[in-house]
Length: 101
Image 1 (cartoon, rainbow, N blue to C red):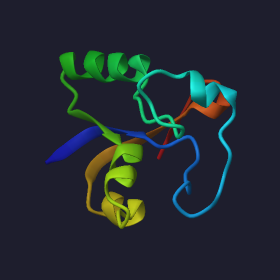
Image 2 (image 1 turned 180 degrees about the horizontal axis):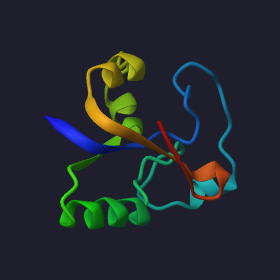
Image 3 (image 1 turned 120 degrees about the vertical axis):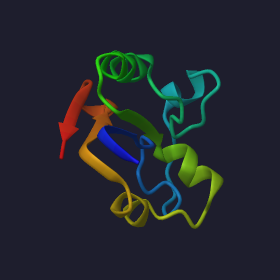
């Protein structure tokens, strides 16, 4: 299926499977999430819902969940197979900055 926009929700630390890292105090305060912030932000879901209601084909891909559920999951290989006009990467570390590619 072709998507107009594909929203990518990455983990807070991209290569968390390959390197040791120590989560800060905020990671322990987020309910129902992992230390790599698996939960999709409500704002991201709201934007996707708005665009969907206005005729855009949108999808949110939770890369963190996919990486946690399958240790062999390769993000680059997966994204090469996705048919989308725009990929939108949400980066929570840059004060809610969206990057388009």
